[in-house]
Structure formats: structure tokens, C-alpha cells
Amino acid sequence: MWRHIASNGVTFLIVALFMLGGIILWGKQSYQAAGPLSEAICVQVDRGSNMRRVSKNLEEQGAVSSGTLFRVGADYSDKSSQLKAGSYLVEPGASMQEIVDVVTRGGASTCGTEIVYRIGVNRLSIQVRELDPSDNRYVEKVQFNPAVDEIPTLYTETKADSDIRFRIAFAEGVTSWQVVDSLKGMDVLKGEVPEVPSEGALAPDSYEVKPGDNRLAVLTRMEQAQKKRIADAWAARQDDVPLKNPEELLVLASIIEKETGVARERGQVASVFVNRLNQGMKLQTDPTVIYGITKGEGVLGRGLRRSELRAETPWNTYVIPALPPTPIANPGLASLMAAGNPENTDYIFFVADGTGGHAFAVTLDEHNRNVAKWRVIEAERAADN
Image (cartoon, rainbow, N blue to C red; front, side, top):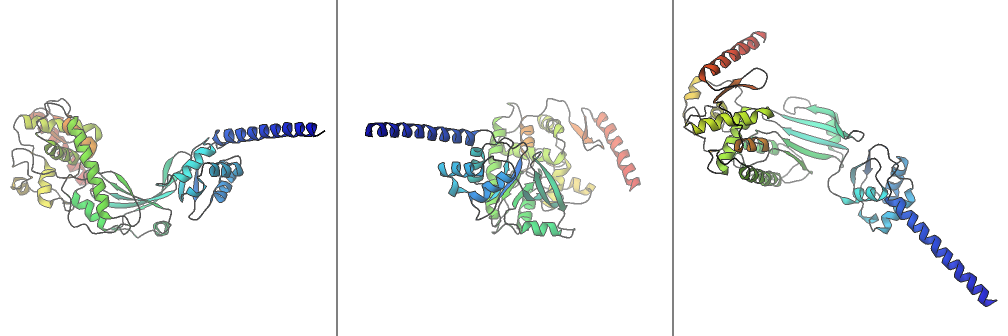
């Protein structure tokens, strides 16, 4: 009898262990399998929240099939205590395991609302935008110029939200003075800037910041990024470009940046200046004259006078025989690359063509005809205004 009972007990234990193993295997497979979500969603994890609340939210949005299994999987992987506050993008078909990784990884939020400070060459604007998870594109909620516009209520309310992301986007061609002046005006940052970085030393790009970040830390990130870009552009340059060192490449890139905002033209503009350098011609480019007047501190805001074209400054390329001694702005990567890799052309002239681009010429006669066309366009625009 006791043998029979013992035998049945062993059998029951084996069956129970087998069933338990099957449950564990099913749970693991379900935890790692593709989830039911058909469209991307943005999941909000509030400060002080826990896995129970998050799993309930995910279950309600149809991102997980079982909130209980989601929590068990998080516990089993020792991630329940690693939950990070923020807004996170959950992709279609994301498994429970992948979602746990997303909400515990930390770092910057990957969706939700952000405030973008756009530092342009001519103006500063502030934009509030929100990521639409269905197509992973940002939708603008409001944009304004703080120098002239009334501060929108939406901006003030959004800025006070603890989960909002902040980003500073610097346009290619801004000067170092403009960068520092803009950073000083941003109350989300702190710290003094004792001196303006060297012209050309800052990489124009988009940088995410957090309230309380130090202004010098932002500038350091920009300097480090620009050093790498300059090194990469110098390493990738053509062997026959008439540039002695990375500093000269940076100077030329800054001129290219200020001469054209049309991406497809950068290589052509670069070719004009390289051809002129090779032929011993003066570069004769207006942005260098303007820099000699403003030193990069703001915008000239008017046309150049004839006397200014003849004025002797270290940057005036109508007067000096070659490159100016310093950059005249902070060029982007594309202009750096164009400076070291100009297109193969015979162009030595260019002038605006009225479309936002330029008309290029090999001979002075051809250039004069292009200039005449541009003068007509200027006159017509003046008459319309």
C-alpha cells in the first residue's frame, strides 16, 4: 500500500514538474513573442510610478496581452525596480521583453512633447512640437519669435511640465558670438560663459539639453563635435586642394557656408574659390567684408557700401590676396567636406540667380551677363515692394 502511495506521489510530482516546466516555457515564449500592437504608441511613465501602473496602461492601450505576465517577466529579469520616468515610443509588434527594456533603459525620452530653440543666422525662434507615434513625425503645436511675439500660453504651460524635453538647434553658418548670445538668453540653462569660443570651433547641429544644464557644457559638446568633423573632412580631402592645414580648410568651409544655403551648390561654390586660389586671384566674396564690419556680432542688416568693399580689414577678400586669417562663421559638415572636395569645374565667378541659387561662369563676359540679369530681378523686386 505504502509503495503504491509513494509511486503515485512520485508520478504526481513528475507530472506537476512537467506542467510547471510547460507553464514556464509558455510564459517565456509569450514574454519574448511579438506583441499585439498594430500601431506605434507613446507610453507615459510618471515619476514615482511602478510596474503595476505601467502594465495596466500598456494593457489598456493593447500593447501587451497580459499585464500580469509583463510584471512577472520584469521581476524575473530584475528590472522592476529600474523603471525610468519619461515618454517612450513603443513600436508595432514590440514584445513584452522589448517594452520592459524601453521603459527601464533610461536616457532621453523617445516621444512626447519637446521645446526646440532654433538659433538661426538672422533670428531666434522657439517651437513646441509633439511626436505623432503613428508616423514617427513631429507635429508643430506653436512657434514664435521671442524678440517680437507675445509668449504663447501653450509654451509657458508646456515648459513647466517636468517631462518635457528641450532641444537647441543651431543653424549652419551662425557665428560663435550668436551661439553664446543665444545660450545666455535661455533660462533653462545655467552658468556663465567667460569668453566666446573661436570662430568656426562650434558644430552647428541639434543638441538635447536638460533644465539646469551648464552653458559651458553645451559649448564643450559643440567644440568636440566640430573637432571630429574637421579631422574627418581633412582626412577625406582631395590631394590637390590648395589648403595647407585643417585651419585653412575650416576658413574656406565657413566662406562656402555663408555664400550658399543650397546643398547641391556647395561643391560648385567650393570649386570657384579653389580655382581662384590656384590662379592667385582674390576671392572677392561679400560675406568676408561683412564679417570685417560686424566681427560676427549680429547681422549687418543692409547692403554693402562701395567704401566698405575697398576698406582694409583682415577679412576683406576684395583687398587681401588669399584666405582671411580666421573663419567667418561656424560651418556644417557638408561645407567642410565641400571645401576639401570641390567639384571639378572651370568656374571662377558666380552671382545670385533670383531663385535662391547662383549662376556660375567661366569668363568675365559670361559673368557680366549673369550680373545684368540679376540687376533686372533686383529692380523688379524693388518696384513690387
